Length: 282
Image (tube, rainbow, N blue to C red; front, side, top):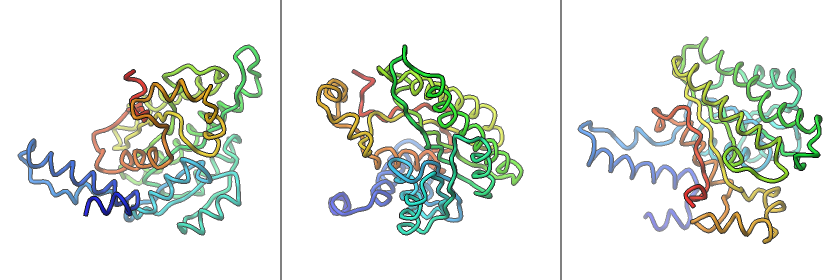
């Protein structure tokens, strides 16, 4: 059965299988409590999940996997055509918004309504050498990668608190928070700032039962990632430091985001979690 699932199974099926096996081990060998593995299945039935930057790449995969785990997905993107194809695929609610505009970011969060799970994924990268980094590029990066997350999270978290319900927020950060990359001054700074924002959110929202964590992927083979890192001269040295010998796929990142959003991660709060195949161990 396991072999068949790994050949033909969907990402939600595979992740639930791994979580079930993990909790079986915990229950049998480490805990006096009689826990049912089904208690830790990723099932977001009756939960509403908001995903920003859901039109492409990691955000789209997070939306697809959340839908696979029975969440009611609300997808935000600035590109109408991307949202249309996503809606055709998973039947989600969609909101078109330019998150660089603070009024648009607030409108999108308010339009989403009551939300239980939030994945702040939308981000931009404007690559410039430090000495040539422009004020416009810096401001645009911070507007999307930091300010929009503050605005959206404030609206969503305040509504969770008013409703008296727990919740979970995952901020999609980057290995660029740990690793200085040439031509990434604004991007690296924005992601380092995002992780510290995550920590403050975790401290202040934790008392309301709202968990906040960051995930920090290595190079991810989105269409943009393939273009940026396919050159062996650029990608080779980075790849050589990853013990698993490959860059990440969108599915690798989305599955961890879904786990952190789930009740199976109930004691995880304030993390900046590398998803890097072991890059930081080398």
